[in-house]
Amino acid sequence: MQVFKFTPRMRGVSDRTRFEREILPHLDAAYNLARWLLRGSDGADDVTQEALLRAYKYFDGFHGDNAKAWLLRIVRNSCYTWIKERPKMEAMGADEEGEANPEHERALAEAGHGLPAPDARLIASADGQLVNAALARLPTTYREILVLREVEELSYKDIAAIVDVPIGTVMSRLSRARELLKENFLQGDR
Image (cartoon, rainbow, N blue to C red; front, side, top):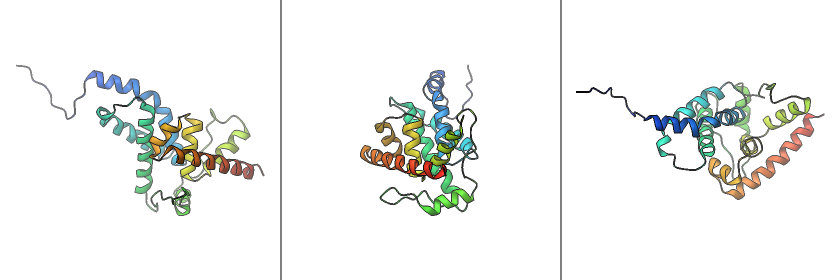
């Protein structure tokens, strides 16, 4: 008689291998999105880890063809949950125009989620620092769209799925985000 040790949700080697093959290559993108949404690396590690655990737990339900978009949606939702659970933080509110909640932006700054520390690998010049600072000053609604499109190079369709808005909204937010980034960059150059 063979005795098997019972563990809840036992996974086969093929599931683990498939998870590693499809999800883990996007770990940097997941951390990058969390870092930008949380305005720093303090909570990004925790949120990324939590998102990966959730992704692994629910990987059986992933039947899509874009693992990166699926993972980034989990990361985005985990970031919003993390922010909502922080003391002195309000929910990531936005009005119908997609404008960020100024009280939320202030709370982020007060909680120590200000401008992210420059990453030496990514920022090689003063211009790079100005761009990053300008990007960090964007309201979260616009920052996430810009990071997903320009940094992670996702399609409008994938961004729409991650953010759960129509493609037209992605396009209009992206246009507005680019305008605001330009304004912020020019203000930082003074």
